[in-house]
Length: 336
Image (cartoon, rainbow, N blue to C red; front, side, top):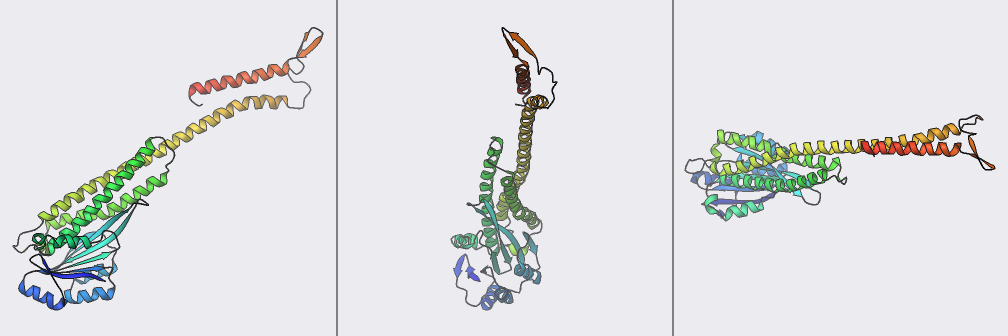
């Protein structure tokens, strides 16, 4: 649907009544521009707007299909900018993605928003309070939209950084309250940010090398200075994302190593106790066999008028002595 539409002259908002008439007048006068905001438009709604603006067919196809890679496409009479928006969900620590498309022409701007991430209502309101910046034309709108989207990247970047520090602390504190799933989920969220920010940074480099006439102000000078600050913030986010990805890989490796060491320690302890238990089990098994002649079975001494059979006690003492010896040996080696 059409969320908002207005004419802007000299940085001031004016009512837009008839798209065709207003756009024709703007082009004849060479002053001001038209700004149309769309939210999840249907094919029919977008076709109605395109009928008046005559956008490039390939740009229209991208707008109708949606779910595009972040990019900046140069056409002869217009410029298409696709931005992936991000929103951090506090309850689940997930990163939701949306999409904003900006069409720039000589006297018009069309913003198409898909999804609820990073709404643009505040962008229009802030621009309308800055008449000097808004008077620069469609390029000012593009800058404001890109600046809002990238600033939101920074907010998401901050939240991801906090989650990363929390996971890092858990892993290296030795606690077992964390599992590999948490690390993988955060790595996936970092990937979502990368998919949004890296292609945009590459596209912006092309924008500086080959500036389109749609982002040239009324004096003919380039307004790229406004976009350099956005690019710097974007590159900063990309640097963080790269470091987060590497650090998460290291954390995952360290976590798996800790699990392996813990499992080895558990196995050594189990093996040690099995070895200790095997000695009395073996001896008791031998003496439990149904044979008449077994060593020490009839061993005895005479004390006074009584004959004492000591074989059982000797064997029992020998089992205890061997078990104690094995326990001390395993303890010294660190197995127990």
